[in-house]
Amino acid sequence: MKCAIRLTKNICDIAVISDDGDFAFAGCFFLPESYAEFLPLLCQEISKADPSGHIHTIGVSLAANFSPASGQIDCPAFPLLHGQRLKADLQAALNRKILIANPAQMLANYAYRKREYSNAHQIFSLYLDDEVLSGQMVHGKLLFGANGLAGNWGHIALPWPVDFELEARECGCGRSGCLGAFVSRAALTQEYHLLTEKTVAAEEIFSQSAKGDIIAESAVQIFEDRLARGLAMVINLCDPDIILLSGRMSHYDRLLVNIPRKWPGYIAGRIPETRLIAPFPSEEDVKKACLFGAAMLAE
Image (cartoon, rainbow, N blue to C red; front, side, top):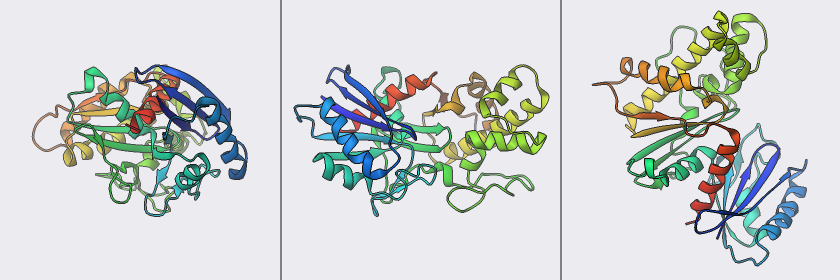
């Protein structure tokens, strides 16, 4: 039996998964307002999930960056956990080993265990949502790196920028021009606002584009081109077998067609054989896969 936690900005999901891959327990609770309230509440819920206390390691999926050196969570958009030493605090409160990774890493860990992807030597996983997170899996092993930054794609500058493209693109890290500031949900909303002076959610922009709205289509095409450039850089540097897209910005079939078409213009040599996939069509699929990947992290 393995235990997994998935933390989003509002909800904490908990699952216990059997050695056969079945969900033996699934529960959730809304996150409280303070960190001091969060820890005892989580301990209480873990006791329900594993009353015998036989599970000694818990994998935690968290849409944030975790620094092994400082032990702190870096996610200004998640004030409940930002700056907290979550791993050390959870290990002390639960008396269990805690392993933390982001959703992109968890989903790569899950995908590698699927028969259709198990022969991939390298998987690059990209989570596109309010946060832009990534991860790398090489020969079945997740890479974390000395600083916990392996595959930190969202904080690399947008490659091959055109004139004025990097202006007014501030990132939460304090710098400007980071890829995450161009391909998140907020980034598409910002691009549409620059064209129309109207604030519209990313999902609605895609919807309007599908209905033939020329301005929405222009914003989506700009988004696609920037995402294609960022992923072309990954292929030039890492040359993965598979690039796995997830998060709410990945739920559009057009991306799987349009983005690879743009790669040859940015990639040296020939047309790349890298496969672009988006195997999680709903948020429920993402949740289950994240929990499964977090549970398997404890292997």
